[in-house]
Every structure is written in C-alpha cells, then in structure tokens.
Amino acid sequence: MNVVCIGSGYVGSITAASFAKWGHRTTIVDVDQRKIDLINAGKSPIYEPGLDTLIAQLVKDGLGKLTATTSYSSVSEANVVIIAVGTPSLKDGTADLKYVKSAAASIGTNLNPNRFTVIVNKSTVPVGTTDMVASIIEDASELKADENFAVVSNPEFLREGYALEDVFGPDRIVVGSNHKRARRVMRQMYSELLKHAPKVKYVETDVKSAELIKYASNAFLAVKISYINEMARLCESLGANVLEIAKGMGLDSRIGDKFLQVSSGWSGSCFPKDTKELLATSRKYGCDLSIVEASVTSNERMHRYCVEKIQRQLKTLNGKTIGILGLTFKPNTDDARETQAQYVIRTLLRMDSKVNAHDPKGMEMFQMMNEGLAVQYCLQAEEIAKRADALILLTHWEEYRALDWTRIFHAMRTPYILDTRNFLDGNTLRAIGFHYEGIGV
Ligand code: UDX
Image 1 (cartoon, protein in one colour):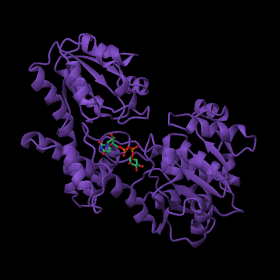
Image 2 (image 1 turned 30 degrees about the vertical axis):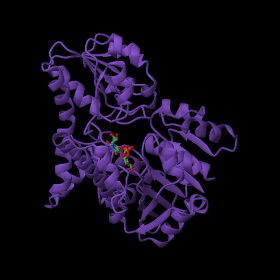
Image 3 (image 1 turned 60 degrees about the vertical axis):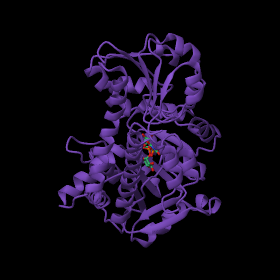
C-alpha cells in the first residue's frame, strides 16, 4: 500500500518506520526541512533506541520504502494518510488542534477524487476530532466523507524509550470506524503485524470510543502511579516498605505489577497533557472526573514531597548546592518536556539553592525548554557532586548505577542522596558513607 504519514515527531517517525518495515511504501511529510533531510540521509529525527538503525536500513536498502518530503503531493497516490502531528496544551488545558486542522486542510487539497483514501487520526485528539477532520477535508476537497474518503481513529499507545518494542509487539490495535471499506483497508495496513504477532488484540469500535480509549487509558495509568506514590508516602509515616506493597499488590492479576514504580511523580509529553485535556473536556460537558482530578493534585504533591524531603534533611535550602541526576521524564529518551525536574529545579531555585544538573540525553532539550533558568549543566554526571549538599536522582538512567560513587562521595560537602526511583543500591552507597534515602522504603 501507499502510506503517507503527516508529522515526523515521536509518533510520526516511529509509525512511518514501522509501516515501511511491514512492506508499505511510506512517505513522511513534515514542514521541518531539517527533519526531512535527516530521514532521507537514513537518520532518525528524534532520539529513540533502535530507530536510527531501522531508518538507516529502510532508507538505504534502495527499495524506496521510506522517504520524506515537505510536499503533500504524495497524498494523491495514497491508500492511507496518517495524521501524526503534535497536539500541545492550550492555556485552558484543552488540546491545541491547529496542526491537525492545517494537516487536514492540506490533505483535502491534495486528495485524489478518483480513488478511495483512508485518513487516520493517530495524534491524541479530543473526542469528536475525527468528525471535525472529515468536515475540514470535505471543505478543502469538495469531496464527500464516507464516499471518496473516510476518516478513522487509530490511537497510538507507544511509550517513548520502548517505542519499537511497543509498535512491533503491541497489546492491542484500536480502530474506530463504522465504515466497512475503511475497516478493510486498516486491517490490510496492519496485516503484516497481525500475521507475525498473533497475540495482538485487534479492536474495532466506533470512532468516539476509539478516541476516548486513548485518554481513558493514559488517565488510568496516571491514577495508578499517583496511587502507589501515595502509598509510598503512607509507608514513610507507618514504617512499611512500598516495594513490598507493590509486589504484594501486583501479584493480584486484577491489579497487575506494571506501573507500580515509585517516582517523584509522573510527567512527560503525554500524561500531563492528556489528563488536562480530559479534565477540560469533561468540565465542558458538565461531567466531573474527580478521580483523575485527584490524581493530578496528588502528583503535584509528590513533586513537592521530594523537595520537602531534601529540605527536612538540609533544614534550610538557601545557599545549598543540589545536584540533579536526570532531566528527562524517564530513561531512554531525550524528551525533556514538562518533566519532574522542571518542577523540582524551579522550586529549589526559588528557595535560593544552587543547582547542578546532568542528563545523558535530555540536557539540550531541557535547556531549550527552560531558557534563562540558572542551572549549572554538567557534561559528566560526577561533576554535579562538586561541593554539593545533596543529590537527587529523578530519572533512573541505567548508567547512573555505574557512576564513580566513591569519587562523588569525596566531592560532596554533605553526602546525602535522595533516590526518588528506589533504583540505586542503597547498601553499597551506605557502605561508602552516603546518607542514602529512597522513597517509601
Ligand atoms: C504514555 C503511555 O504509557 C503510552 O501508552 C502513551 O502512548 C503515551 O503516554 P510515555 O509518556 O512515553 O507513555 O511514558 P510512560 O512510560 O507511560 O511513563 C509516563 C510517566 O510515568 C514517566 O514520568 C514515568 O517515569 C512515570 N512512571 C511510569 C512512574 O512514575 N511509575 C511507573 O510505574 C511507570
């Protein structure tokens, strides 16, 4: 099939690469010439483990399976056009659909009246957007939805850092459409995956339910993490161990052991944005989602709790130097949008602390997103320890286990570590002389 993917961000580039890998002739369309050049040179436009290698294979095998361009002209030859553009939050929490709308209009002007095209909404978009996209395309093309083309919802569930694993072995594919022919085209598009991964559940449903499944799933996961983080705080008061609680709970197959890892709170490019949008929409329609609301409040409480732990330790924070390990919202990504670090660092700076920070991949993006923040960025992780009064590990990058902890110990003014992910080996660190604390243990 001819597949066109609009957008080469996290979802777009990974989605396009996977469809090309499954044998479809895939074209990525993006307005950013720099990204287009990177892809055509066989390089990934984003940092995601394995993606560079996959794109290099697809571009360089000479079969023309994956190409990239700034022009929408390939839409006229497409069987499927996937919309995978960004949907950032507006001030009121709702999703900004300007990129989706402009992609839809450009698709409309390039649609071929002599063939049936399926347009796929892959971006996370509020319920009703699929209908809105159909009407924008009708206006721009003067063609009829459900006759010349059909718009379907096909939300993406990949996690950054594990995206290839998720795309090539997902739990489920959700396709929202009541249009018979569109459903057939979608099955054909996924046929290679379904052949090789027979355990994948293929769910066909109506458009609005598909759109809401994505928000409902992300909000549920956010609630789950907020819940275990609250248990961690309770454990600290009661003297119980949250690692044991998570293990004991996770063994119940109704609960499951995933997403029960303690942290300084969830963050990133999806959960904050998606919970905000879900809450804004639910309020607009007069329906209170008090559990999701509580999860957001509880999450902010968790960010604050981590700063309070350091403050309890150091008593006053002004004039103290705090080293931060990890600026991305989780390991194996360079994505530093809306991360825990942003909250923690801003709070520390407000309290007149000095902040040294390191991240293996996310420093550049963090710096760009937080221009003017008085942070000392360190190229070597060990440098954050220089005359530091405390270290706080926010992101559990594997390489942090292997740091020269003895050197770090000697560089610090007071050797206190707060490990918000219960990730490092506390016994080894205590043996070196550190005052090591996790959360809820
Ligand atoms: C999420 C969803 O998992 C994915 O299905 C969807 O497509 C996009 O949003 P992502 O944002 O990439 O994916 O990250 P995820 O791995 O879900 O983690 C989100 C946040 O929760 C991170 O800050 C992570 O560190 C935190 N988290 C995750 C925890 O604190 N504890 C956990 O047990 C799991």
